[in-house]
Image 1 (tube, rainbow, N blue to C red):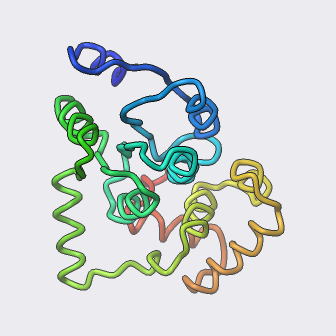
Image 2 (image 1 turned 45 degrees about the vertical axis):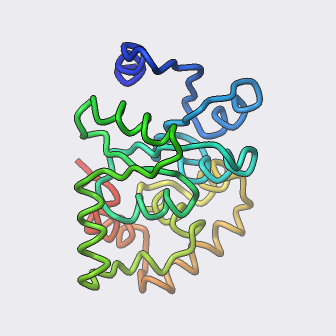
Amino acid sequence: MGFKLLLEASADIEVVAEADSGEVACQLLGSVAPDVVVMDIAMAGMGGIEAIKRLLAKNPRLRILALSAHEDTTHPRRALQAGALGYLSKRSAPEVLIDAIRCIAKGQRYLDAQIAMRMAVQDTGGGYSPIEKLSAREFEVFVQLARGQSVLQIAQALKLSSSTVGTHLYNIKQKLGLANQAEMTLLAVRHGLMDVPS
């Protein structure tokens, strides 16, 4: 709501639709034609990264700005690999969101300055995260498992069979050398993919 009010206060930006899940965003794309989609990465259901892929499959010219509370480097990389033109932290100053939307609307890339700096340091300094070994789908499953979701819940959210999610779970454990869900949560927290559980 705060972001909507902020955007509507800007003379050159109009909010044409809102969605509370990736599924709803995909459904709305048929009835509205936004110039820019601001996609929250941590949405209910399929999640923002999968929603980005599906929206671009429907309209490859769509311009998407990923917005997230995550300030790690893995989420921005995944969002950009999925096709987003930009990535912005929710902790950025409000006027930065408007600048980012204007930039994306012109077809230019936009990356939160602090995250861009961290990514550059990682790229030049060899700061490698083991999570980079995961495929895009495995990464989505990993994040949901780390948040305590069950295989069945993930299967329903991502519209996959439980056996497919089980296969991803097996592959994740093998690639990352993890034994259980608690270790996944610890690894996710250590790499900044989620906040420390309270």
